[in-house]
Image (spheres, helix red, strand yellow):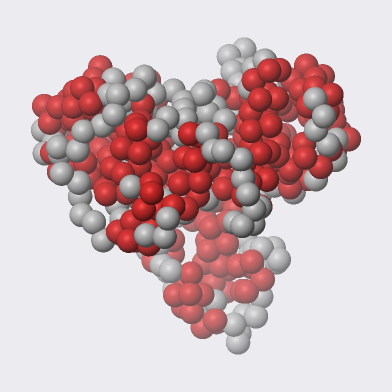
Length: 459
């Protein structure tokens, strides 16, 4: 396969994946060790068990404001970071930003690093950052090399041990330099890893995904036969090399043995899934086969305890397979949160069946959005439950702009009654603008500014 890709006949392989159907079940997978991903963002989560909910909320609000003001982050990104690391003083984060800027990092590069490692904002920068950056300089790296490579692959800073840190740094630098070389330039003899990286690059795997692959402890780009077999299967299954799912599938195929894959598939079959449904779920979310039999069954049973029957659980998992990885505690907490907000059990069932992603929403986010929809806008909880995707939209970027326009129209008497929540929040942007902004601009020219947030909305 790889001689075809690298010697002029790659186009057939490169485009074949777009036309292939769901894979046959007898595709066997190479042997490997258990899957690991040491750089999951969850590793950066900070705990604050000693804080009250109100104190935690204040810290998150403070953190969001700080990130927006100091780095120009979007509200959504700042809120995401605040759930993983938050603080009530600017002292430590100021020191972190000052240190990174002293090494020549630009704010856009710092944003990428902090997004990957939020905990740097709350840890001692001398121990977590300065020592590593200083060691890279002592190892002969220039300031420009450090800022370029670390900002492109900030996970390098998560490497433990200086030998590991410099080894991965030098390898990523070598790959970047090779990528910039002319194809006519004579390159030294390739290692398996260099050859495999070239194959993935030729297939269309983007640089960002490629570099993250290089520094993972899991080594799907280091072998030869197993690597070739894994990539061949992924291409034949129809995964798009430009998307993260291609890399996720490579991890799973490379790291799990034939027997392990067969066992995981059989677990889903025993729970009532067909073979085709298992592989369709895998294509939607490759990590569906990563979890143990115990975890898969536990999630299935937990969802049944929430009130779903077996058919409904299967439907939910096919629609939102990521739910397999959600903890039992988080699923049950989701039920409690909705009930505490005044939704009935039937309404909760409707919500997670129509938009299962609501299971993963934070309690404070749900409370804020629900109160706005019900108390400020006047939609009932029953109506909200019928259009639960509304709970997933961004308050700042999506909900407020549209709802502020509706409130303004109602206050001016330009519409007689509150429109359906589905009409306001699920209509395409151009359709919304046509019916609620452009239609009334002659008599209410401020509508455009209210929609964009440049004008204070009418109360």
